[in-house]
Image (cartoon, rainbow, N blue to C red; front, side, top):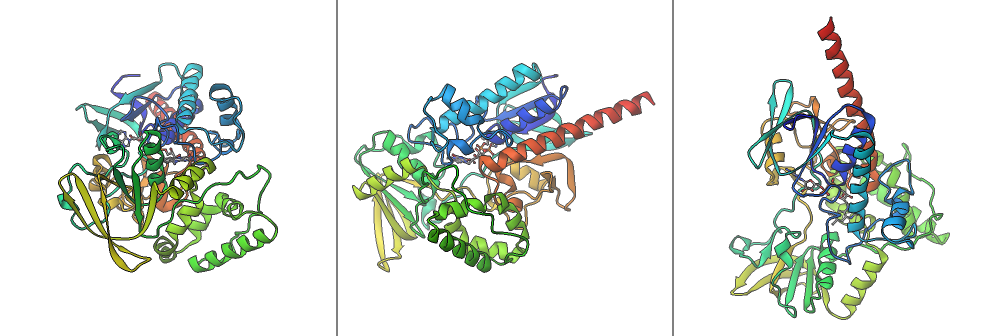
Length: 470
Ligand SMILES: Cc1cc2nc3c(=O)[nH]c(=O)nc-3n(C[C@H](O)[C@H](O)[C@H](O)COP(=O)(O)OP(=O)(O)OC[C@H]3O[C@@H](n4cnc5c(N)ncnc54)[C@H](O)[C@@H]3O)c2cc1C
């Protein structure tokens, strides 16, 4: 392939981008594919690049196959390449999963696609139309041309925590929790304040633990809820699917339905987690069945509770967290920040404490924003995504959770017309699908989009050939 052009250019080489490349290369014997990623290695992305030993998968190994139709693939790989004792319900380190995904790409290239894949370690800054191709501008200054471009950019980066006074923050405050420097130069017996108590916050607590931090970790959030623990549920424990087209179409009605099912399950000795998990294959249908106002109601009133019950942590991590809480090393506070300020080497956060209904104060050597990825794409500060909106290549979905797409993942332009060359996979489809951020959903998208794109581009190549010979 010519270095500066290819058939499909994938922006982002985490799980989504790498598995899409795998399917494209397997579905076609001629297409060339290039992946642009900030990092040097395929399959890692944000989730699977962590070096910390307490960063475990939060989905059991038995559910983490990269293939929709080979459920035990990761389990087999992990037993051979990581630890022979890995069980269906084990939670191996996330770094091992990155290595697994990279191995699938490597095997695909060796078997089917020598010379057809290019990995470009760089950052995509903007997109432009160039006659019948799309051009992606890279940070190094060059441009790559492609017949189709796919956004596999993952979750949007986090917005700043909402804290009046933050404008004056210095290096004590970190907006991006995954920055290498966020956990560096903290006094070993000092104090850290994490704003937000979701999965990111738990991740940072585990990273601090694995770095040997002995001080106090304050966690402040509006609801004061940590993600619920997973349980070692047997492979055979299940709960029948209970949602159908006649089920309620309101957030309130659905909530009532789920509560009734959880109660019925409890009476039969079945755990609530099994009920929540039984909804998973239908979650996208449920989301699409809700009217816009009901989706907004869900986001306003239920989202926080859904997230902590649906996106749970490995039992081992929950145990460590519970121990750290009972030893007083981790202290969870519930409230809303009133003011952020700094005094020399310490940050001070004043907040309205929900339990005592008084203003309280926390001091820390480091404050880290763990409020999660930005959910309003109008506010994100990402050159490549902004360039799509500014030029009208893309429009936000009606809930502003990501980009608007059709059923194949083709981006809708500012008028609502589906693109024939620009697609999205993974978390950026959240507004349209809701459940699109974890492996079990994205692996299906990678397989269907890989097939769709390969067929579409090969059909166009054949048509061009026919026109030339006519
Ligand atoms: C900490 C964490 C733990 C998780 N654990 C699990 C788990 O155990 N099980 C599970 O099923 N799911 C888990 N998830 C969910 C996770 O989002 C998905 O499993 C999956 O990794 C998403 O992959 P992705 O490729 O879409 O996004 P990402 O992993 O975020 O990858 C996107 C990649 O695109 C690159 N990129 C973005 N913009 C550009 C640009 N302009 N130019 C160049 N490169 C760019 C980024 O640098 C990144 O490498 C976890 C998520 C996180 C954040």
